[in-house]
Length: 276
Length: 276
Image (cartoon, rainbow over all chains, first blue to last red; front, side):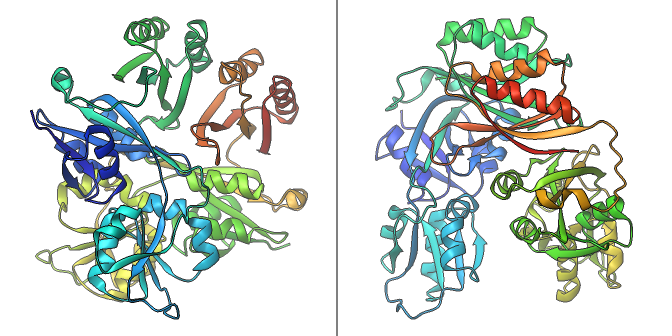
């Protein structure tokens, strides 16, 4: 069965690269402008692939909120080493000023110190996607407009080239992507190149109102000697200054079921987002 | 002594309203385009006031990162009930299409469902500040361009009016602001109208590498019966998938010192951001 993968961004984006790694180079991708559109596209024959956090930028809160809203199941994850490049026109002269810098807001944030140092006055213009930003400057054809994107995007357009490579503020720059599908489709998924051998689970935890509820909830993981790899808080909408927590932890399906039962036994609400 | 308050945004912004509530209506504000500029402006005679989280949007990660970088001390906090409005030209006719919606990205996010329902095709254009977005549409003078901002901004410009009031997606919409100053200036601060009677502290906690380190750290608060009001994780730059935690808790200066000593005793790193 050939399956389509909805990604945020177009050909040449980091999402496209992640999809190729996970599902093979001939993967059929469906380009979406926003994370919201990726989640809305997921159905029986369409799975989704979305970035969820970057090691410089942090969590992509919008994706966490969409995970709660749509309740698709996470069935795989993959991380990519990310290198950002300053990309301009091939016929640009070194003397040409740079006035406009186009990219996705996460990519702009990853290069903030570089941009502040080299182009303090240039306008940063947020674009839906890094690869789309390169297409845009190719179409503009103006030497004062540049983009920030991966190498694949620069190679896709014959009129663009890399002006400066690896401009991210810190070389330890990784993005973690998750693959999502409707719960009913989980059993007929395509084969994936899962590089991660330790099984992992993701849950949403809403603690009871009791004092120390989060401390007691973390005690469950401690008792089962389960390694918590991530804890991200998000506001509970409609309740001022109350939070829910997105947790990732290393556990197989049986351990995950036990942890969830124990957490619920303490009066917490738990939603399983996937065991993968 | 008259003191200046650096705020993100201009006259008529929510930051301006928060500054007036905390320091009095005649407060002298210095308008900054970005959070980064607010933090850079803070010095002996200039304090800063910045939003740190919103009950619909969540934490403003950039502000947390700037708190760690600059190490200014938090000396007060205030929360505002936020109502967003769709603002257009006074001479706009009901039949005029709306094609462009200008506002700060946090305000756009607070009204996302409303915008999706009423103006799915209109372009959302991010602006530095809600009040600046209103000034911009007043200058444009085009009936197809509107802004999202507070009532004060609409009233500031004679050519603009509120087209739709309270368009935020949830009525429980609050923003929490903090006042910051250099540690050396803390003793000569202006009198504030501090509405919060329970003393609070903010710290950055970097846990030791031990398994269960976060659980053990939260045990310190449990033993001292100290109420944790917030826990926000942020990536540690340069260390893949490791996190530090921003914690807020209710404690006076003596209790805070005890908690910090106990946390350090367990091998954690702690930075005190303020007791207020």
